[in-house]
Image (cartoon, rainbow, N blue to C red; front, side, top):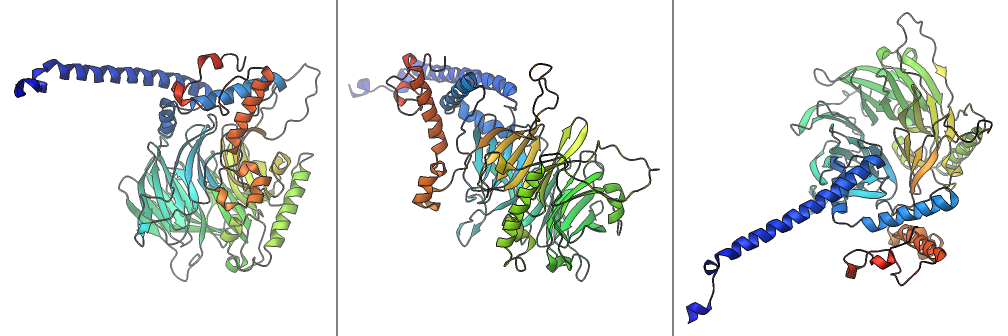
Length: 583
């Protein structure tokens, strides 16, 4: 009787088959659902303007599969359509961008929709501004890194970012402690990390075709790192008692496709040093820029123009009266020892006014802001290094530069004197060899753009810059990040006799305002005066706007106070409460 009462799996041979068939049906059902969601999102992303199949977009697609982004997307889209119908323009309040404080560096990934941002507190995140979503966030206390004193190493400020793979899957970062990390955005996860410098890493560039990462730091070393072998390929430092010995480096750039073995390194003494990486790093030439501090260098798309930005010089390294700096355009083909003046094509000095009418006000504002910051730091100017002055945001000189194409001509967008300035550097066509060299011209900007005249506070300064297509990504010290668009000249507008007012240099496309802050870092009276500093305040603004729209349309029924999915309805609104919200 006892053996007859107990049933085992052998007595029911069909139970295993039924269970396996049930699992198989459930798997196929979920797979079909995921394929339908991905197909729909892939079509939307192509219309919106980003690649859904890219490695850095994978976390966003996974979140969409979990249906965790659909409700807020619908609310934002409905609110935007209502505003367009009523007032003819849309203002969508985006959710807080991410934690980490002020943005220190921006890198564009693949398309113009996804950007990687590094923060002052060490965090890095990938942001899709077209979707208004943080795709991924990492480097928070860096749990995968080495331990210090038996504990997890605390993350520090990230100085540089750059993409180091042709499919933009790998992202390299350099921080204040000399650590260089390579992040796999498919996860994201930490792929490689090594301490290549004893001091801060201030230069980071990648030769993506040859899988080589070039770095430099304030310890004067220039290092070539092989990403495939995961080891240092070559390293060099100026010999003792020679030019550049003991002078901290400030920036780095590679020669590009035309000069593949050329490595350009800027020093705090106002000089650019040219290294040859063909047979091991060997210094070839030294170019004296002036009593300035090089902050950024970039090879133009033409391949033979070198753009160098410089800020206020440091007399302790330059040995002479400091200069304000500016933007310098050099001819790479003419760079050699002592040939700096002959290779200089144009110098755009800091403090020069723009050429167009109405732009002088921006220059005056920038000069006042620079002078105020200089006065505040006058007691510390002789003690702090140039890098420290840059970190304090004085804004004197040029801090960053990017290039953009405009009607067949190349335009350099530069952060100079706390404003964004545009300079025309030509079509990129090489001059003829028979052309006689002329002295370098002192150019002026095409236009100046002051963010304080377009919704930002007077004490806010730009701190990071990036560009892709017609879009310009500008981070500020508030901290905020804005996506600006360069308008297309000659676009039809109105009837033939209508005289359209002059277009602004940049138009706001999207603004992430503000970044998420730690509420414990602010006094209660500050949070009362600025409620948008509280995490989640911007999302609540969207919710309040939705409630106002529903109240105005007479559609407010018995619904939850916040437009979050109801758990009892499986994450969806009841059918009777959805109809007619944005009709």
